[in-house]
Length: 310
Image (cartoon, rainbow, N blue to C red; front, top):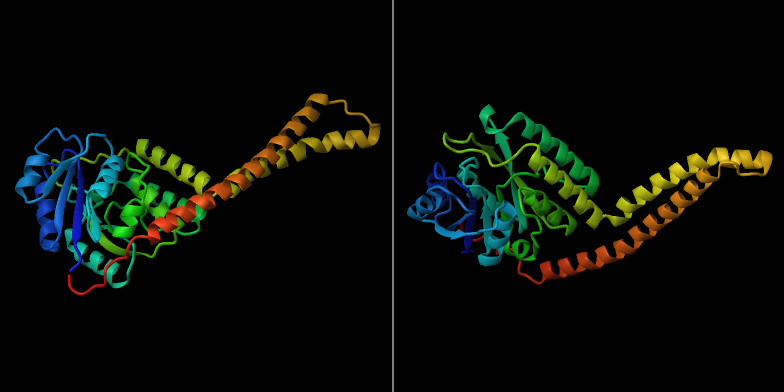
């Protein structure tokens, strides 16, 4: 039977962590449940330990730091990650693990379906749709819910994922990592529950939204340098061309260039556009080399074990 590790990053979740651990232990009785505490100031660690979880700590604040530590420390065939706030339905865990093993996938995303209005703030719904569409437009493919923290991974995903993010943008980085390496992935719809009384969301709609937007832009610049720098080059060249039209017209009639500053500006913009274009070409070669190395590191690890019994 494949070994399964349930990973629960937590921060001040004493109101929910006990029920969360119990839920996943019942859903996956053969799994080992790990709770990684991220500087909680309440009884999260104590309650998680009493519920039967293995409790560890990560002192660097932020979900990305916690995920990096979990992925580095824990050895398993299959990894299931969820939040410790009891918003993700543990009842979907066995189906998600079964799908990953049956279809030999590297990641299964639990797409959230919220029935209670209190479960999902309106700003989060709109932001999720916008960012999901943006990711699809930039990278060609996407998931229905790129911000879901309910995911199942294969060992080769976990051990080939560098984890560069520090906060809630970690889910976006996971999605791009899978898309860029053309990993086999799947999705399962799962209930998203309202937070129990005493539990508060750690996500800032605008602050974390801005960080996620910057992460998408950075990943696009790194992973698609030709398109990123080529777009800037094209905009500069078009602007230079439009500014040059009256200069050329005047020169054809008078054989003089009376607006010398504009001519200098057009020349400078054209030179910068060419530099941006070739910078994109050069960086694309570097990116391809990095992607090949990541792909080789991914292929060096064993895939998900065959499903025999769960």
